[in-house]
Length: 287
Ligand code: SF4
Image (cartoon, rainbow, N blue to C red; front, side, top):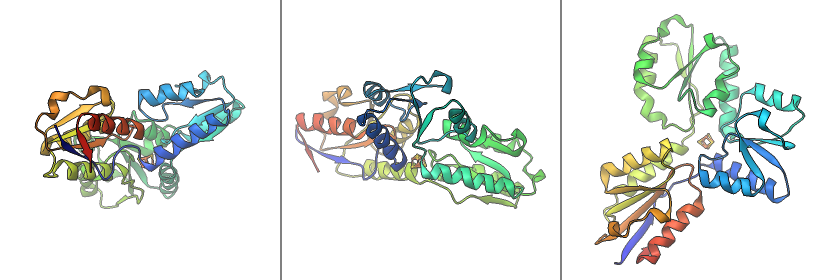
């Protein structure tokens, strides 16, 4: 059983999550004691690891008993910053700079009289961060074409559209077009983060690689972006969704010439390394 192993050109943590992960680990290594509001990364193994390092995950500020609260890469509403300070907590802010760009740009758009549209999931922490403190009459969060069609966009003097950063904006083109068609005074904010698109494009190229017969997509079963990567790969090549090296079934490798590896945005590099090491143990040769 000798086969080639190739990784996607881009996979796993985006730069924002990578920086957040490093900041929290450095804080813990220096003896810091803190609690992360929401998961720093949507990955159970990372959450457990952080707990071992002394930085546990909490769901609200009221649960924080440590001197420091950590805000994740997806950010929090300004009111949560204020509440944390009022509680006397120190803040370790790992909010991604691209997320802050959207916070700032949306405030500017609002001040100029524009109605705000956030394309994304209303339950996602990042979107809650943008909208939680706003007057509900000043914005919409839209996730589907039907939702976009259900609103009378014509009543607004101007509209500014923002994208949740963990989406591939290109896939929401139709949704935004519906808004633009009804209201020509619609503007798309220049704040798109391409991290998700880059991972998806690289996964597609990997799955189309003629040297490969199988693609392993690594990520949490609950991770929406991992599932999306899997769907992209499965369209072009036999693919398996795994959480880690322990899920590899030797029978999959029967007569394969090459195995591709990609990983969802919440998968740490060491999990990818473990998968590749396991494949090498089973006869693989890294490209
Ligand atoms: S997806 Fe983009 S904006 Fe969101 S945390 Fe990652 S790098 Fe930052």
